[in-house]
Length: 97
Image 1 (spheres, rainbow, N blue to C red):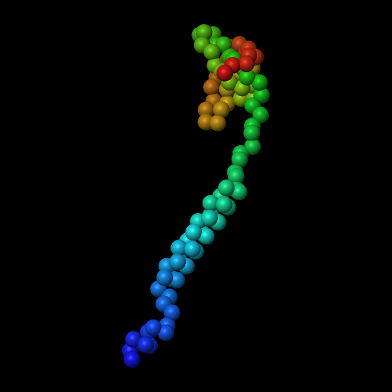
Image 2 (image 1 turned 90 degrees about the vertical axis):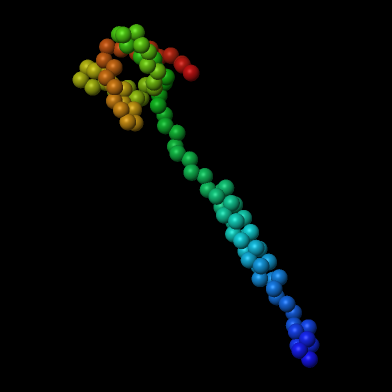
């Protein structure tokens, strides 16, 4: 009989989706575990002491000591993207927040 032929076989219909889900879960676990192990931290820059510069116009500039450069008798603030002429300003070493 035809029904006897198929009753003796084991069905593998549930095994394939189960294996796909199990593999996907294992890949996700490995991915999240590996990203938690890898931490990229930039080194901390030592910018020196905190400094307040009083300009002749009465304004204050709060910066760090190592960002100030003296060239040819002039005082410059040199940041990452800009350079500001602070000539005539008075440097005060003060802890600011």
